[in-house]
Amino acid sequence: MRIRDFHQSYAHDEAIWQTPTSRLWLAALFIALLLFPFTANGYIVGLACVLGIHVIGAAGLNIMTGYTGLISLGHAAFMGVGCYTAAWLGQRGLPFYLTIPLGGLVAALLGLVVGIPSLRIKGLYLAVATLAMQFILVFVFREWESVTGGVRGVNVPNAELFGIELNNDFRMYYVIAFFAVLLLVGARNLFRTRIGRAFIAIRDKDISAEVLGINLFRYKLLAFAIGSFYAGVAGALLGYFYRAMTPEYFTLTLSIFYLAAVIVGGLGTMLGTILGAVFMTLVPELLRAVVSFIAQWAPRAVEVLSPMQEIVFGLLIVGFLVFEPHGLVEIWRRVRRFFHLWPFRA
Image (cartoon, rainbow, N blue to C red; front, top):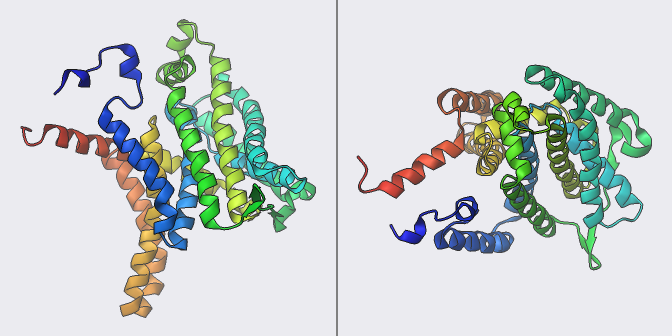
């Protein structure tokens, strides 16, 4: 091992990409992201767009739950706020590059309100409080027809850039990828700052953090606001991607989806956020592909296997909780350690 591979300063220890090899892999990843739509079919590109949105949404929940210890079951509702805000503003002529961050900002302001009880309650009680907000906002989505369109939903105008309408998956891919990379890098850098370290201190022991001078109320509200902002941006992108949304999409099921993603991927890590979103997005697609393959040889088996997809998916999640509570990111770390030591491992 070369001397430059050791951490020689605090700045080096906190650096995101610490070695030339990691920077090389980063460059390769960016090139792969840029070329991906040219090498994949339309279905895969559309799936990649959905995956990018899920990564953003899961990152916001991980900031609240994984890094700050604030359990939220209302994440889907904040996505709905971002989606309907972007749709309402877009219908009035604002460009998408303004409506998307504004959708996140409105969701963040609502997150400040929802985060107020977090000073008095935590754990399961806080989860119940956010669950109540989830049901309240879904009710608002259904009844405020002048803004949300009610149960019929709302049409989101096509995103447009330099006179070009981003009206297909190929074009929307780059918009979603841009926001996903930007927000992931922002989240990773957040935890190199005083704010991020305060979040982690609150998660580990909030009483000790307060003794050390951390203002619990301020930082808990800030965690809710940042996590809700990410959810709002994800919701706005979702609206532009599907171009029509109904309240039925932003139900409790979606909130549980994101909570499962951060748990399966690994709480408190951005890599875990990505891995969890990939798992929760791609595994159901793989299960459907397996069922479709079997149906070619045994058509009647589909009647039995189709309901089994959700059961198998649920068992996989439970299996991670039982056998690998630290998530997919811990498996990735073990694989890395194996190759770091190979062939000299014990």
